[in-house]
Image 1: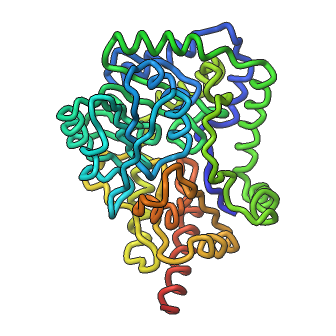
Image 2 (image 1 turned 90 degrees about the vertical axis):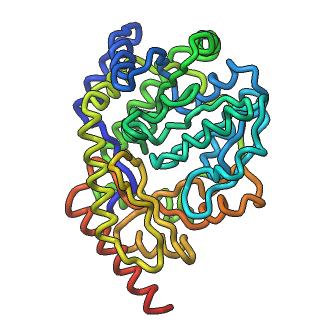
Length: 394
């Protein structure tokens, strides 16, 4: 079975990281400096996760409200609540994955921070968001968790607003076991407050947790084998009658991804990926274009938008299934292609119709750096076959 995801690092990086000393900071210092150079920013702070980065950004601000896209990861909503903020939702655009900017102005004011999310690495209309926020007296944080490598007019996402945060989760362009990330802040005073909050909130990763996360990293590598992955899929999903470990409950709890700083061994895994980021971005753009070409003309599902200017570094290839997405998913997995699920459960109410329409429709096609040519071809063939079957029935 073709896995729904594969991590970017390999066994060599994982083995080298396993012997790094916890009291060493060289990899972390080099990683932070590489990110400053790459993004052309002054203020970078490594973080335990994207959600952990967002939580300290918000906690270090006196603003009381956060304006959040209704179609987003529940971890974002949980981070806002953890920071003691009130959440205001804005529905998704009618034909896309980002915030409907037409609905933004009434939701934000001088008490607000707007989260400008580049969902899946597809940039939002940041220029208009920044203009509306300025008119209303709001600050803007870019949720660039999924958009490391994406640019807007040649400038890196996550660096164009008042602040930004990024993720090294296993589904992202750069990943480490088990999570990780970083943040940027334009204003030095806000950045200093963020560092003070982080110093109180984040502690070193305990030895037992380090061992657990390294073992998880090894497990991710083992599951790149198709037979091993099929056995895993059967045990974790098929027999249990589920498709994701997510659920509908919003839990504003301080987890390990909010409590521990990015470890030296995690930085040692992330650093080589940052150093070859152009290669990783190029590979994603190539795959994105090939999937769009191979699936062009599909009638039972909609493809993601065209990257007309070649500026995106998407971490997902999301299709929107016109009918029962779970039935579609099961048919694909029975033919040896697994899909991932993005935000099937949301933190907003049902009145945000466009967001829930996306939640009910989106499936993520296998799409990652290690996707082999035969896997890509098989994925396209299975999707085309399913589309042909559904089109004949309708």
